[in-house]
Image (cartoon, rainbow, N blue to C red; front, side, top):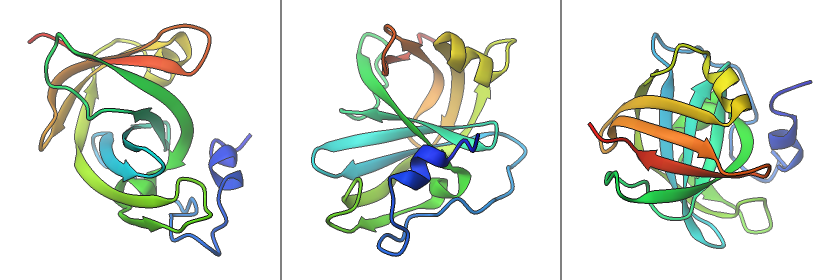
Amino acid sequence: MDKLESYKNKRDFTQTNEPSGEKVQSGEQPRFVVQKHNASHLHYDFRLEVDGVLASWAVPKEPSTDPSVKRLAVRTEDHPLSYADFEGVIPQGQYGAGDVEIWDKGTYRNMKDIPMSEGLEKGHITFSLNGDKLKGGYALTRTGPGKNWLMIKMRE
């Protein structure tokens, strides 16, 4: 099954300038991006490069740098790696219509001895971000059987 099937099915690429899933080369280190997305509700899309796609979560408030603050992060469909560079306006009438701008980006390091994809399946990943705004250890933990996760800044 195509990891991007859900992503592609939600979009009409004749109407939106979002990347359609063209292949791009991964770098030496996996990337992350946070996109400020002013759609029906302002939120932040947090994306981690995992196995050739961007695993994605919608975070209703900007990611916190305070370890005492836990943020809701709702798992969304995987996005193509080329989406890491996407900024622009998704037209009205299209899925996710609104302004998208890159809020932060950089690379990350998996802090566990298991592959990120396995951690995602199990519902818990820890990683260290090296971005312009977000730095240091973070965890994403699924809170139950649904799509809700918590994003937590780890104490250094």
